[in-house]
Amino acid sequence: MDLIESYREELQLIRKFWTRIWVGAFVLFLILLPLFAPEHIIYVVTIIAIYAIGVEGQNILIGYTGQISFGQAGFLAIGAFTFGHMSQWGIPLPVGLALAGLAAGLFGIVVGFPSLRLKGPYLAIATMGFGIAVYQVFVNSETLSGGRMGLMVHKISPLWGLSSITFNYYFNFGIALLFTLLTYNIISSYMGRAFIAIRDNDIAAEVIGVNLTRYKLLSFAISSFYTGVQGGLYGLFMGYLEPNMFTFMESINLFVAVIIGGLASVEGSIMGAAFVILVPQVFNAYKELVPVVYGVTILLVLIFEPLGLYGRWFKMRLYFRNWPFR
Image (cartoon, rainbow, N blue to C red):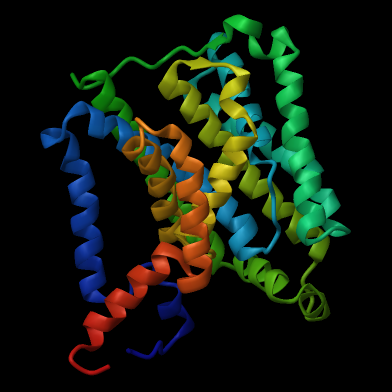
């Protein structure tokens, strides 16, 4: 393996020539996908792109900062319904998405305060309570959620002569790509290194000058912002919102995506998002098996591949890079 000779080289997004080649080829494949793939495939990949944003945010919180949260469904609902109301009021799309993320981020800061005193399962239970409380508020408030009729979200009209599904694909793919690049920059910055220090040993991190209060709350805020934007994009894509779309199972899905995709890995976040979207598609006729598949896969990952799907992918790349020497 090549040695990293400078900090500047370490901060490069893609350091190796052949890695740039295959990453560029993969991005090109995704750009050209609507030209030859059926609409159902485009629809599924669009959902994966939207979901990847929330999983990346969850991974910043769990994988990089070590703070467990089961309240992401609450942030997802807050972002989605905030964006839904903004669209009905005629607020421009970029502003609506930003406000959806900010609304979820503000609640993320509030929920983050227990992390200053709680850890592990106690923090998980506290955040789970928040997610359930948000769900109950939206279920029982017709003003916020539209009641039994739900909330209609005004969709954007396709541009450049593209079909609706193709335009939505490119739109969401572009935003997911921006958030992926943003995530890489966050984790390679001082902020990201502070998150990792807190995860590894918060007492030692505080000794070397990391402000635990600031960075724990910042981690919750960033993660919630990502999830709020995911909720806004999901509402925009579906064109309709109702509270039962944001049950506790959504928090489980995001958590499963992080664990199976790979903790502390941006690539793993994308793989995990693809996993939790594709598994229900594969077992569409046997939906009761989906939780079983999730549970069995998590057990297999924890026992045989703690780094998740990205860990397996990384080891395969390392094997072929060093072949025939092992």
